[in-house]
Amino acid sequence: MFKEYHEFEENSKKKEPISVYNQFGDIRQCNEGKYDFLYSESTDKTCVILEFKIPKFLDTSLVNVDLNP
Image (cartoon, rainbow, N blue to C red; front, side, top):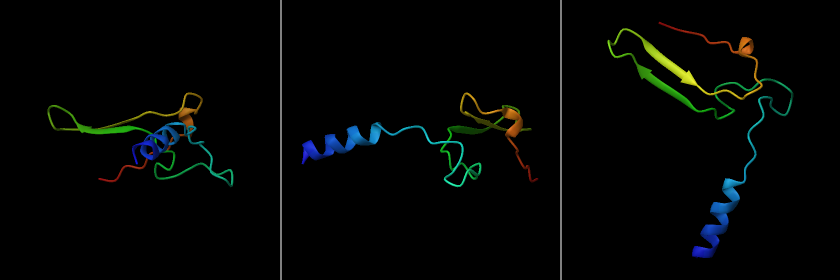
């Protein structure tokens, strides 16, 4: 049982990073790339802060964010 668990754990760690593009060549939506992000509030509670990590070679001009009040 433990051997199988360790094999499973090793195989799950060997995953390649997910591509920015899906199988049809379209850019992924709704965090399909599983990018890390942090959602917090400012100390004075007047703003909401959203920070996320994007791949090294992703042009930030391609990032489009919609804000709804």
